[in-house]
Length: 185
Image (cartoon, rainbow, N blue to C red; front, side, top):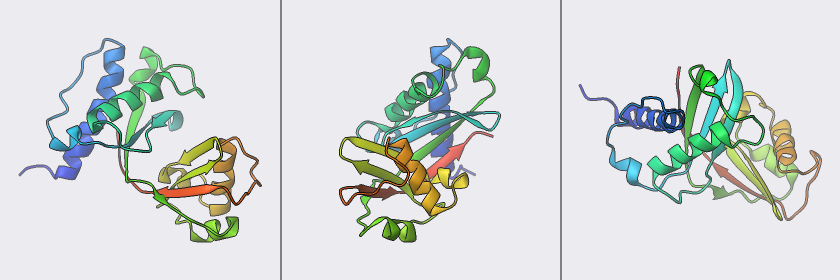
């Protein structure tokens, strides 16, 4: 019986991400399989963890290149260019787990004020982009696992954008998005 196409896509994306990092270290790679979706534009985030702790996370908010390229480039960026971490080493790679999130297009999330945003956010569902003038930050829906309270979620997102946690201004713009995600076990 053939695999579910969704599972095949997830397997392919995880393989592409792992292959990109493996190639950097000169390690063998696995064929990801050929799926037409991989040639379509896609926006992804690649998250790396070691021993259950974040080790890198980089991604794209808008689909601007083929899915295959987006995943590979974001995997390399998460492994070697996430400013929060030293570059991944070959010794760490074997015990690093890969997660790929495929984003839906962000949709404007107009709010009256911060209280309105907090009241309407959907924990464990919404990914959120916050933009204020030149500052911008996002949290994937997975961040709700560690920040389940909408008030804390928004406060931490503001901090990530370089703003005070209690800051609010009418010029703040929010956008919501969803994800399909796959994670290595």
